[in-house]
Image (cartoon, rainbow, N blue to C red):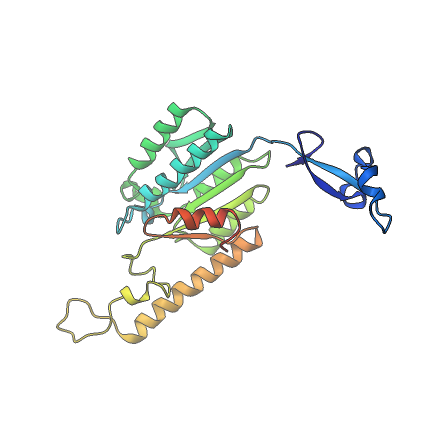
Length: 262
């Protein structure tokens, strides 16, 4: 972040830098238009990372990969990256409520990191009864981490009402939020254009799978509309979502974090 100390970063017009103590007369005198320039410095600032993980029943789907395992892989990478550069990482998993075994305040301890990932991988979202019906506990999780600005990854398949999604984003509005959408190519109702060919096509009734063309088209249209609504909500609060289809494309994920993929 820009600050008063640390390493020299660059020069900027004084009218933008707004710190007369940093005026660089030598550079200013070289400007034929008479503009004043000030030095800008970069300083290291610790960042707290949190992953809020949806643990509702739909996250128990296992196709090409189990969604919870994909979420755990993401959390493992984020935790390791945070620890390497001296930041802290926390995890809060939730269905209708916050899941106690998947609630870890931010830490840089390698031991705590290993335990939180073990608990996450061992959790079965499909065996939680009524608690697995929704992910409203993510709103409570957002309230727990309120305060100083943090980097928050919301990891979910986002198969939840738009009102709940908006409430989660609103509760996290003071943070830098990165939505991660988990999809699986074998999930028949996750039929974006890239996966629509995997939907069963209409065949004679003797076949095991029958789907009328109108129903197939309606499912594809519904999925596209749901994706568009999610993107619009996410953009309203900061960033477009990143979609993981099956397993994680780490190169694409890195490009997304660098702003090269929208």
